[in-house]
Image (cartoon, one colour):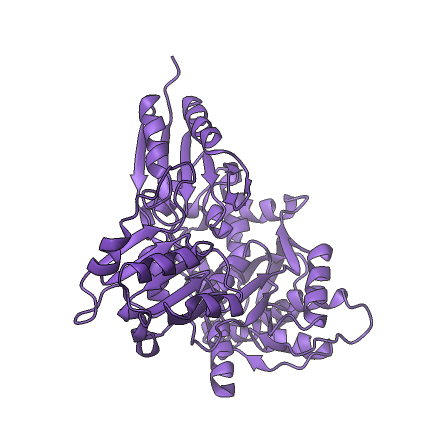
Length: 507
């Protein structure tokens, strides 16, 4: 008899991908199947192995990808195949998420399961809006209420009288459609019409919107501002604390649409940092990182590593590609022996650390020029250097190293290719004025992005251009772009910090 798999009911948190728990991420990393909902940031799915089966079962008003009974059966069937299944649900599985129903079905069918709690939007969304659901001297109790009861119920099970008179802060989930009823019932059972109310749409996300008022005018204000689901309704005196405790939607980058032109595999880190600053990252990859058609040259270099005194890595992509070939050739980090290792910057150095290697050299300035300048004092005259990197990298680093006496073997470790369809979308968004900032994290992203404009100088409307370093800036300027922002530190965090500082000065 085939052994049953196991189902993990995982709470994904309120929306921002970083708010999932550590245990939740660990489950995703091991999942054979992920069954996921509508209101999730799909960036979470990137934590799963490439061969993980991902099944969308989202529900929106009037349209369900699968009925609840079908979802229940799907979880049972996949577990019976002996697979580890992650049921990824928004917020917390047991807070109006029907996780209890799914757990019941699993128990009835003898399927092992585990519940991984998540941060509920009932607390997190108000927090991101600068409103604590409880506060000393203002609110000592709060209640979480569904704003959308089961339509098959004969009557409401909500005790409006006790809620209106006995709880300081009321948090309604999924209640925008029923806002008139909520207001009516609370006033009917004694809530003062002047009680502060907030309606928060897309809470914890970069496109968060919020309308405040009171029970007497909140319906009109929500309608005027076009507030629709998904939104959280907050009723109570704590709403008045927002002006002092607001922290998320008043950041310099909040609401700014930032074009991320990195490769698909690399874009997530920049996008995550931008989102943490309140920006709206738009991932439109100008390039894509792909494997080589033929690894003969790289494999031959790895086979004779003993001939080299140095290996210099100029990107995390180079590190990843190199170690994939190391593994493919049935070798590991011990093959490097006494070879000195150089890394162009901290991100590349971290990629090495994750593989058990501490870089011997990181330049003070994270560029090819910085590498050359720093190695001048390290007696590399006559030393043989292996340089595994992109197939289209320029000759500046190779020529510079040879200029100070090194023997350099430059070997392609991966391919950098243009993604024509994606750059076309980027051009359309930029020329229509939908983008506030265009980011370039390498010269190749500039070159490939500009190809979509042909021979004409691009009309980028109001967008400003931000570059990670002087080499990328030089490429951008040569392409006819005005560079407004140049990172002081040539790293992804440094680029984000420079963009933040620009808008802080402009405000």
